[in-house]
Length: 320
Image 1: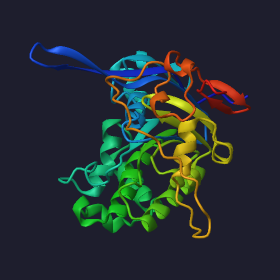
Image 2: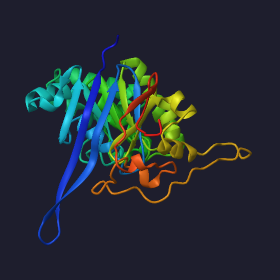
Image 3: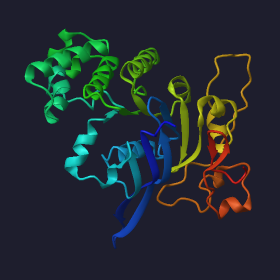
């Protein structure tokens, strides 16, 4: 059996802030016990409303944010316990593609220097070898060598995201965390970037953790999908099973909101009542119960565990 590339166990991130005249502590439960397994070569997507903890989860996995609790095993090593020196070696295999392709690129550096910097930091190759790899990677992502002497402001949004992908790819990583990589782009450019990422995955045997709120994009690129709500994973399944037979009431509501390009087809939209609760004051029991149409008494008092409904399909709901 194939061993997981990435195993996340009870990952938790709480932000503590002081508020009020007397400086009372306020705890924001951004990520609250996430479990997820990712195997080599697959694309797993995390979806959910804004504020559900998707991006924080991705950053905790890479230890750009220190987790409050939990374990993150990458190739069998718990990276939460690694020293800074040991972590630097692991970072070569774990890279991030940011949401905003302009803000993530240094405006004072040329594209060539932006792409070379990761190689310099990790002490890879001579100056000539680094230059050769930079020229190779810029052409792989669909740009040319002439672009290396330009600055980020001279490119379109789609071209800047290609540069961001090239920077993540230049260290030959095994895992790429893509945090909303196409949400800032036009629809036509989104398709180009998604197709590029799929081509690169085949060519370099990459594994993706894809973070998005766009369910159409997720369906196009994913193998499996994890649905998050208020810091918790409420459903995990392969994409065909999830889109064909969503089980959790929140997943059903999300999928009912996806537009269908058929004017003759009537949509049965599920309208959720109320707003997303504050992660600093989450509801007791199942955090979704204040907005759930099928709420029972047990939902108000007990947190449902993530249970396997069928092969590969897990759901956290008292109805199941």
